[in-house]
Length: 192
Image (cartoon, rainbow, N blue to C red; front, side, top):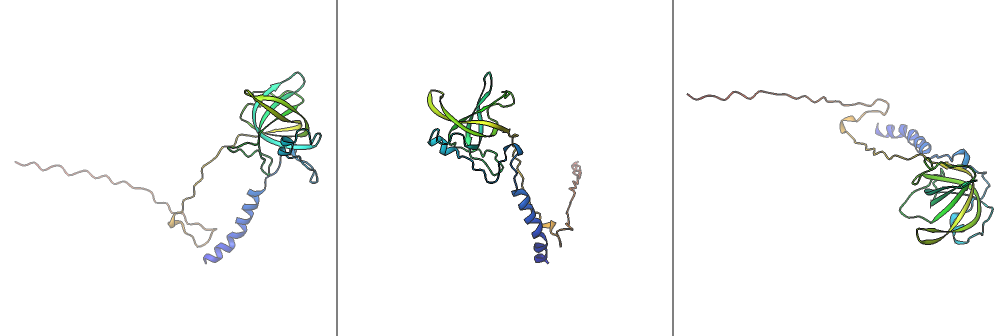
């Protein structure tokens, strides 16, 4: 009987894995299947070697500057997941700058938010991180996607041995209400 349960549950598990494994790239960040995206490390290590090539980079916003005709975001780079969302970790590959024509409100595009940009590689720029000189790879963005903050939820599954069921479609739930019995203590016997 248990083998039958496992066989009957197998399609449900497989479909759950496929559904949870599918992660779609936001429409604004999608590129043609045959398009080649330039890797951040190539541009970082060989400044101006990939000018004009298409790139999709992401990370966490470190700084927002609004200029007269565009906005500049300084991004701490993190590798992208299959959904194009930055995968934050304890180490970064460096920083880059994103230029976007138009205003990006610093209240919405604030420090610490995850972002992914799609655009073309432009001439790198010299700058500073604090007092440290740094050569920033630059991306002229055609599209920017600001990610919603993820909240982690702790999910724990507890197996109750009394919940066993002969089939997965007819679970037996055991519910035992707690009963509290209160007894009065006998009155002490008085000695005369």
